[in-house]
Image (cartoon, one colour):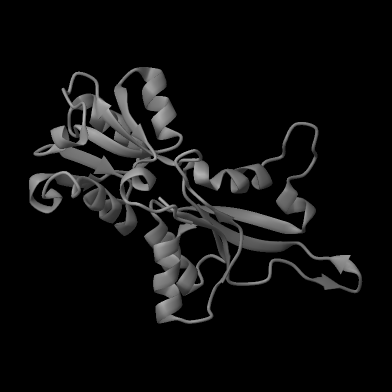
Length: 219
């Protein structure tokens, strides 16, 4: 999944009479490795009395969203001033409906060498290649982009629109669903992939499937 980081809709801090004011801000995030920069900036790391946000005069209230779509909607409404990681498709949709509303910075490119998503299958499922997913149920991260990319990927091997059931699952539910047989495979994001492999509930089918099969390196 291509991610576009650090969407801004407002200036973060200001100064008055030479003294920095503490500014409360609501920052959206998704519980994924793609939000790592937000986690680092918001934590008081060992040896530090303040977080990086606090160093800049910010009192951050983290607001968790289950998908980039929901985070983008909150950003557009003004419920948050920034979202730590937002998919490019969501931001382009916002730009189309409300041109010039957002300012975007810091891109991360996903390639076959630097990947974010992986395809995992339940141990003992008998799935060894993409053709074996036909007629199965596959779990994906919530949001429009994840499901669209999954159908594009599987569509290269069989009519995915009618021959595969895709269900959107929040990350805390994904491993439980895979181990319990509610889904046969997952298009997973970190850290879910590493957790599943470490716990032995899944077998890796492929890292970076979108780049390898959809023919593009996406921001």
